[in-house]
Length: 301
Ligand SMILES: [Zn+2]
Image (cartoon, rainbow, N blue to C red; front, top):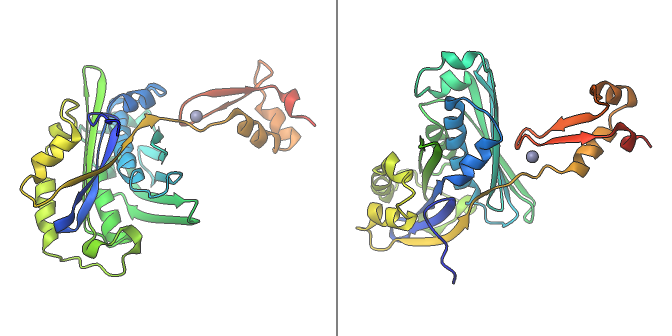
């Protein structure tokens, strides 16, 4: 088996069988830099998106189907951030944040979710096309951090005791981010197939205390391989397993042919209104900031 590097841009599966716990640990570096390079966000928005992408990697790598897609979407009322979207497909990540550039100066350092999003909601959608399964859960964006919101998502929407930790830091001009997700899946059941969960199972607090002791600087330390970090946290357990590792990369699925087909469906007069001074229709991809220039003549049939 070829050795997968476990330092950066990778998500790793983790299981502690004797405690009925499993989860994911992830670290992101160059992939975050690549995604943020398409945008010119202020520091607070970069920090938010770096954490959101880390959460997206943790949740996306939980998907059982290789073609499964995970989407994280935050919608808000009266927030400085008004839309945030991240998604995951086959280890590829992308994301963007729409925000009020003027009000951003109102944010204190280390803003709360309420200061960022106002009255906000986080929708998490798991799409597994082979099983024709689409599942969406929604939680209020409350609490101190995205990690808190993700934890309440699992508690409220899925009744799974969970621990989520996220950290992101820009050092010497480069982002380092990391995250840990642990869940209690009793009686060997996996994910959504479980019929019954004891929320008060005695093994869980033990796992949550050990996992919760992880430091932000450990999560973001690209010199510390993820399997070593798991060992550091859980070496006293009878058995700790690392499962499959998923390399992470930046990927956008915007497609010139698709953009053209969408524009072609607009009525003629609306399409004419889209034509710019140079005689072309320009469409931007919000995720990667690519611009598609379309010759209006190409579309007329
Ligand atoms: Zn794109």
